[in-house]
Structure formats: C-alpha cells, structure tokens
Length: 440
Image (cartoon, rainbow, N blue to C red; front, side):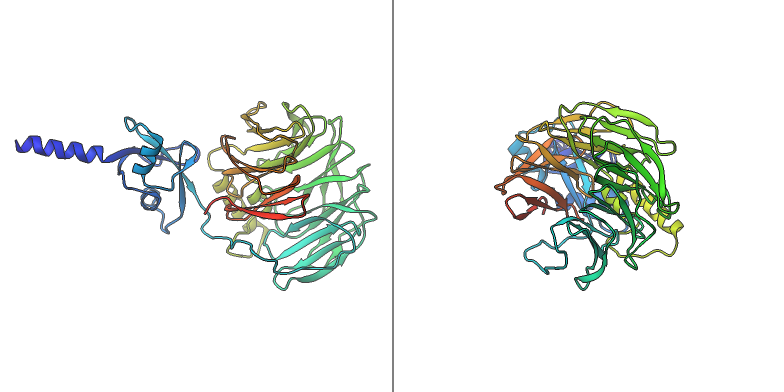
C-alpha cells in the first residue's frame, strides 16, 4: 500500500512538472531536457540558464516558445496555448543587454549651426562625438558631453549626402552630391588631403572595412548613383578598386564581417564582392523592383568595433583588433552573418549570402515600398520602415512577422535602435519622431 502511495506521489510530481529543453538562439541545447515546475517563470529560468552556462555574473535573458515571448509562468502559458507536454517543450533563451537605455521623453538640446537642411548624421564608435552633413555643404563635429560644436569643416562644393566613421574612430569620410569624397580627422577637424575623385554622380552610401579584419582602419567602400562602388585607401589617398557590374544606380552598400562587400541596386539585384581583387562572387536575385536598403545582423558590432558601453579606450591598434574580433565572434556565434534587403516591390528578403544565393525567407506585409530596414544591435530582430506609414518588427533569425507599430500618419523614412535593443526610433514625413518600446 505504501509503495502505491509513493508511486502516486511521484506521478503527481511529474504531472506538476514540465519537461523543457533550453536552447540558444541558434537551436543548440544548453543541456539535456529537464523537468521544471509549472509555476516556473522568466526569473526562475534566468537563474537556471546562468547556472547551466556557469556565468560568474548573473546575466539577463528573455525566453521564447514558438517565437512568443514567455512573460508568465509555464502553467499559464500551457493553459492559454493548449500546448502538449508529451514531449520536451523547446524554450529559446535570448541574451539581453546588461545595460539599459533611458527612454527618451524630452529634447535635451537643440544644437544649431547648419545653414541648410541636415542630410546625414552619425555617432562616433565610442559615442563621444556626433558628425553631421548638410545642404550647406559643411560637415560639422559636435561634442556630445557639452552638446556644443567642435569643428566646422568646409571643402565640399555641394550637399553632403552621406557620412561614415571608421570603426576605430580615427577618420570620418563624407560624400557629396557631386560624387567627391573627403576624409576628415575628427581630432582636428582638418581634411586629410585633397577630395577623392572618381565617381561621376552623387554618393549613395559609405561603409568601412571592419576593424577586426584590419587595424588601424584604412579602407572604405563608397557607392554611387553612377552604378559603381569604389574601394579607397586613406593612407594611399586613392581608389584601389572599382566594383563594376550593376546596370543601374547603387542605392546601398555594406562591408560585412566576413570580409565581403554587399551592394544593392535599382537593377533589382544584390551583388557580393570579394575585396582582394574586387571580383563578383555571388548575385542575389529575387526582388521585382529597386533594392532600397540593406542591413547586416552584425552591423552594430561592425560599426562600434572594440568600443562598448563601458567606455574603455585602447592604446594600440592590435589590442583594438583583438577586442573587436572577440565582440564580432560573440555576436555572430555559430550562425552565419545574415543580410536583410528592403525593396520598392513592398517586400523584404532574409539572406545568408555566405552560404546560399537563394533567400532564407521572403517577408511580406507592407502595403507600400520598404524604405529602410535595420537589425537590432543584438541581431535578434529586424525593423522595417515603409511608405504605408507603419513600422514592422520581424524575427531576425527566421524572418517571421512579430508585430506592427502604427503611430505615424505619413510615410516612415528611417528607423534606429537603442544600443540595448529595447527601444526603436522612427522618423516620418509627418514631422514626428516616435519611440516604440519593443521590449521592457
């Protein structure tokens, strides 16, 4: 009789527990399947994951079951979704930023100085300076601590359409409507040599070679309305390669962490180039209209290089290269670098271009052209801005639609993420900026 009672108690305990399989975002198990109590919630799971991974410091995580974030105890989720407990329940553990960005609720400063429209802005990799390009043909550097102007840089003859910092923070390159490029020293505000001439039409994008591939930074790529992309060396002060092959204007360019360059064009294609000889190695086809925007899953760590929220500075290029490589590898994990493209055909494609020339998935839902796409800094999410007045959020690994933000009353032009991947900023023709809380 006692044996039967013990067996019944054991069965009841098993029924009150759920067999779960905790995995990382790539689907790799963190350990063997385990029984967890049904009243276990996110906080309990955080403790378990930190123990499984032997984390010295307790790190924050969020948890997903079938792409839905788990915010309640397992029991509540199982009842609501009528999920089966006959086999192990897969739970994806997503690492979160260990810092939090304060929500924006007011304007802290209006920094005046430009005489015409501001056409391009970019934060320095260490977050200490801001650069801006304007229709007044000037590039300006601003001190973000004091929110005051540092340098006004003149040299362009027409609108400054695009600017980009080198990931080591040593240079800023600006491109104008006339097609010329100028390299600036952010420490002095002086130009480093004469304008770089080669493009026949205006500059549409600039991207630097990642610092984990080459330090100190020397090479960057520029894209132009003339249909060519050009690789420049700032030490040699000249164009070292011309990437020709597109039949219409190049609209966007990215230098990937694997060392290849991606160009998106009005000829509806995305081309992949190697950077030792400038040869075309792959062509990504699928869009039925202009490719407007490209984004890489590793873009945040490529842009910031070795710099992070701690504000640490580096004494040598070798040290910077080492730390940047560690950050890149931690960000990428075992998965390939992912690329997302947005088009005038109202659709987006998610690619793993280093592995396959065919898209991983087609992302549909926008009712007008997709103007801008952007991966979150942690690479887990993709945001898209469209002329249909909406911003949409997608899973950055699978391309699956998550939700839509519909606060704007005009076409949405641009989006930007906070460094902790929790807040999303969007700018619209309706003259407003809106901050959406993606995750609490």
